[in-house]
Amino acid sequence: MSHPLPDPAARLARAKPAPYVVYLVDDDAAVCSSLAVLLSSFGYASAAYASAEDLLAVAAHLAPGCLIVDVCLPGMDGLSLQAELAARGVRHPVIVVTGHADVPLAVRAMKAGAVDLIEKPFSADDIIAAVRSALARLEDARQHTMAAETALSRLALLTPREHEVLVQLVAGRANKGIAHVLGISPRTVEIHRANIMEKLGCRSLAEAVRLALAAGLVPEV
Image (cartoon, rainbow, N blue to C red; front, top):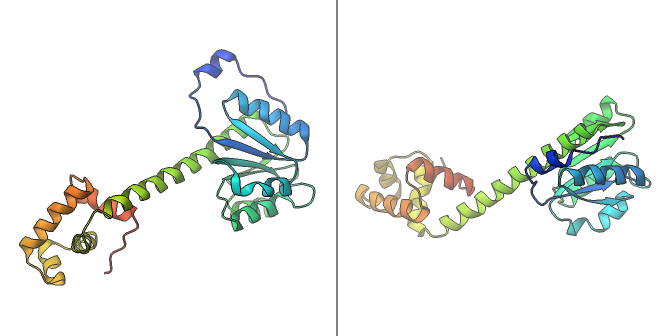
């Protein structure tokens, strides 16, 4: 792989990426070295492993990031590594690289969840675009997890009755309908609704419903 070294001024103009690590799994030391230089020039940290087994030995302790995995590796191949990581619950996005791409290989990699499959010889633009895509997917997942955790913590502030009322609100029922289902008065429902909005920190019913859905609350219809 060949790539021009970025202009220092252009490098400074780039936004600093999030502190993720790009893990390189390739038995070709020259390729790993070249990729490391490229990634560093764009502000990405990297770590290289010469085999799938080397990566798996530390898989449980990987910092957040993505993987660039060569298909052809000594011992376990790259696609088998991808499958084994998924089986272990390691959710790092995987970019697969190969010197012999074909349709069955591409389909297998994508079905296993690969972000991209890049054929050698690849360009710097191809690699950086794939890394950005992989880390964007990771960031989206992180934001989703954080939103769910925040929503769950807010819902934990509700009393059991307020939680019941919220479930009915998410189901789309109006105050009278909720009162009928729960066997309480419409006025009591209004009081619970006001308390729910205050505790959840929501200014509208739509916002409260979105928060409840983010927490995984699924109403019984």
